[in-house]
Length: 253
Ligand SMILES: Nc1ncnc2c1ncn2[C@@H]1O[C@H](COP(=O)(O)OP(=O)(O)OP(=O)(O)O)[C@@H](O)[C@H]1O
Ligand SMILES: [Mg+2]
Image 1: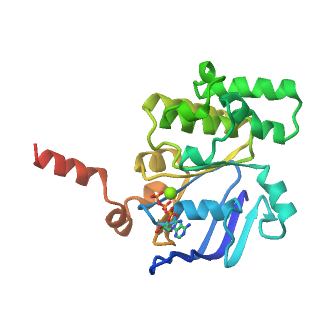
Image 2 (image 1 turned 120 degrees about the vertical axis):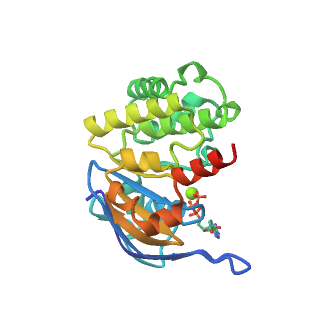
């Protein structure tokens, strides 16, 4: 298994009764598979991903990444993290270097690859996300969608065993989505990469993921094949549907 989560509990200590919890969450992600997390705004998807990469500490429960216990100790966490590429929902949380090529090369240098290999991977990743011509510019002057593409390039250079993507398709144009899927699928074949992604877009959940976990207020309410889950009445009621929106628009034309 790439990811094993068992009876995970977590709580933010927010002000003004804004406490939010993840409650008794369990799921497993098979190696080389594509696993989706979906749910409404504020359901807890990003929180779950932060727990999975060790940015937040659970109150109780277990997380294993490729069989290794995430919560054992700090040194251990650092080693496990080197297998994980984590795309933040907001690219401004990810990018930091003065130029795009330095930013993208950072993770590869961290892996102690030789400089020739780093350069090769940076060019390859920037080409894959269609940003090669911007390589000497500051990442902060890019558009939001371009920032997200630069952030993804910074993960591709690691060729991670596990790619965790928080809303990888939000705010991107169709051709960028196509290019991202192409490079991710290529790595899934060559590196046997596993993918865990969050999305509100049920099109991607239904057509790309092999399994989906639907989250409602910090709890898993369905886990299984997307085609099965998305037709379930409680899931449809929770998430709403394309047909309902279309009907509303058509009615008001
Ligand atoms: N640092 C924090 N302290 C307190 N509460 C927080 C913190 N971060 C998030 N929350 C709360 O936790 C809940 C879940 O947030 P989270 O970002 O995980 O949701 P999400 O499912 O990713 O939503 P979205 O679809 O909008 O990305 C929200 O109610 C949010 O207000
Ligand atoms: Mg989120």
